[in-house]
Image 1 (spheres, rainbow over the protein chains, first blue to last red):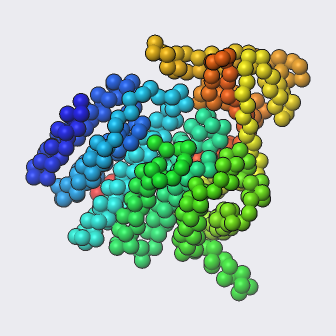
Image 2: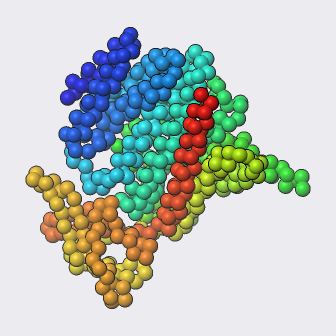
Image 3: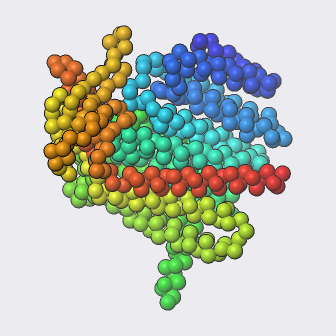
Length: 237
Length: 244
């Protein structure tokens, strides 16, 4: 089934020349996720391989939806393909986690907490790419789309945090644990709260806003990968 | 009077929000690097935050004190901005659009209140228990472990486990309750959780007793936050659709 990943990578690469292939790549990704889900009998969102792959798929799904009604659909979609390929490449560095889930992870609250977090991460990634596009091309539309992606991502992320708190309360007896992962989650949430408030002031529109979206995605990557790799925390992949 | 006006202007300012949020971000950022390096933080999992802070020196806790000060100012800032916004826009026709950011703010404040309560008055204890073990809860109720069970798959991997518990209040037996992972049992504000089980040489369960007085407020805050956020997002989407 790993073949489906390679077919997705090939399709996305050809997509830079013929954008219809981007959608073929998306279908291959969905195929791989569906197959893994059916094999495991659960949402494949445990471990770096599955979560990175889920993030790449989410990136492409949201990028497709965001670019759908835009005049320059190709111009907005293709840079996101680059981000998707990056996540797929990273996911291939890790072995898939095929062991059954421990009982404490077999709950709606956990699965929705993880899925919503990665939807949010994907939207924050898309926003960072749009911010970069704004800085390079001075395309006002990219800046506005970046704000919208962050607003929706923030909704997903806030919901993920509330669901995570409910899960933690049922699993561990408290909705909050003092671990670096939790602290970085709050840092991330606070950073995007800051972005949304800053954008209410005219000074922050345009370039500062674009820089914030790029910085935000660096925080996303550290919260997701950096904390698990570099800091001792009971809350990791 | 002039001083009062300066104070009011400080709190009713979006610039203040941005500065305070940035300050809080910096403190939490520094704290996240201190936390994994210091052994003292291990005790924070079982001790309420305020009691833990009182027991530990400023060398470890300075960023937490700083965060509490900044959060206090942020609460005043949030309240002042929300009240000002409601007064300014009270005659607005799009009252839902006016009120939803304030609902988000109220949700945020409830979540902070929840953390305050949890930091002051949470409780957590862990013990090993076998069949027949009686655990006395701080409120005098006794929990007796009646059974420890596990489901294993054909390969011998334990898929699930549960513990049957019967509570006794003043000697009177209550109906049996079953604890499972993600399915604790609650009595008088205390939660009894099963963490794990071991069957060799005899069945033993690791039981956790906890009380988190902030939890209901955190849930209420979370619901308000999400309700406000979703309403705001839907209104923005609808307004954009109307403009198209």
